[in-house]
Image (cartoon, rainbow, N blue to C red; front, side, top):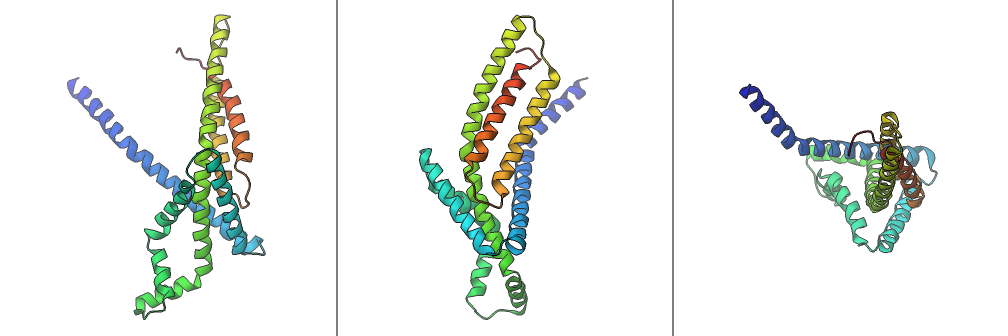
Length: 237
């Protein structure tokens, strides 16, 4: 019995220690997936849909950046956080991998070894796609910062709606009413789906729109679902 308890305790401790690593790995994996999807969307629209090509993507980046800086100033934040996020993501993808420095070195026209010449030829053959990926990465960084600025609104609406839902639950229980576990779980899962879809829409949309046109309706719907979720909470508090 003692050995079983010790094994259980060790398993719990190991799980607690590994949980942050698992969470970090999932976040990194999710970020990589979003970056790749954003690149695919950008490549598709630049090379197949937009007559202006990469110029259209540059215009979207400029418009989103201006709007994000305006939103940061309106919230009383630091506008440099927006550009800092974009530069950080760009450096993480193209700086750490050496692609940015590689492009600068190839642009100097210095003599190269045979392996470097092969790499340069491959780089030049795909330079338009690489440029689109670079601009798209900066655009994704700007939109990530914008998404972070919308998060306080969603959290505030959720907390107010949850408090109201718990109040309605207490009133119903005092009057002999019953909770619904199915409604609770459905409302909870719908919130996750709604937030995920809204976040993906803001991050990879091929147009420049005000993020508040997405964030405010999403926050409103999350509030409705959060109120329903906690009003139907079945366990004892």
